[in-house]
Length: 416
Ligand SMILES: [Zn+2]
Image (cartoon, rainbow, N blue to C red; front, top):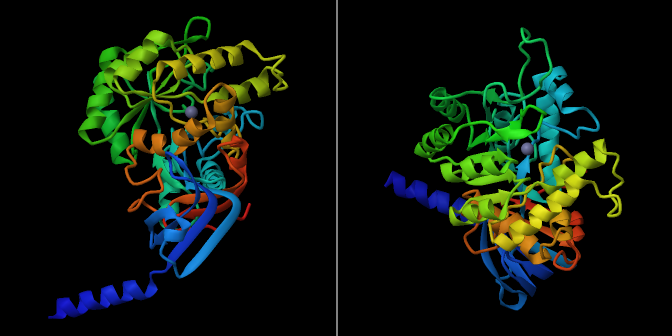
């Protein structure tokens, strides 16, 4: 009897305070297709209806955006909230000279910028020497202490002993590294430890610039990568591999990682292997673009395009024709947080259709990252959505014109 009374009260309270909000716009992109004069009805933190404006239930309040596009909140596939552009401070100096607390406080602010830019979820791929500050930032967002996107975090990430930076010090001088070194059977312990400390997935560097001439070379053996994947999989977690070399990509693909980051030297052969094994590519075009701008004196024009950009363009074209799944992630942090759309502009510039880029940054990313109730405007899905002025299907840069951000059914006040 007491229980029934309690349940009646709960139901009553819910129906009293739950406000239905109708949001409509000239264009709606639902994560797959574009419609005209459609909208959504939001009930609590869920999408209750999606359809033509005339057929939607009238909510307690209605917001209409003319000349705008309503779409799912974007998902950043590759971020580092604990980094900021290397032309402002070199990566080495960020890792070696800045305290954990300074980095965490800045990182929290950077996370917020991602949200204000319309990215309601980010996959943050390693704290780069800041320990588990990413886990703390994620918790601060979940507790409502700061505004920020949903975060999937990697924690420290794993590198092979001797391969990662900062480098160039007296051999007897141990400097803090940008990720956690581990090898052989110890990998099992390190994977489990990282999971225990809050990693949502494991990030591993399948190769790194440790060749005799400083070039990228594979690091872990095929067996080591398999052990990492198996250990993570046992806990229900995926593995993400940094890989620039063909061999690093091949080993990571055969080991069963979920996505490969960068893919600089991807051949047709390794791309088709990835497709066959259902491994997605996260090309991080904006990182290469930004590094060339910072350090190769490139003005950004087509005429003076450096080889690194030409190669990346060619790689992206091969990836497009291979049919491999392409997830959108720019390695934001290497460039300014909040300017995440740069990656999407480059994807279009390098040959992907706008609509495909929009799918990549919403429904495709959601699927690849195991987010089964995000990335689409669909009944029953979580109410993460944005409105941008203009029509990004025609002009991808319109994604910069964010007018509304709703996360988990709550409209975010855009401050920056
Ligand atoms: Zn990265």
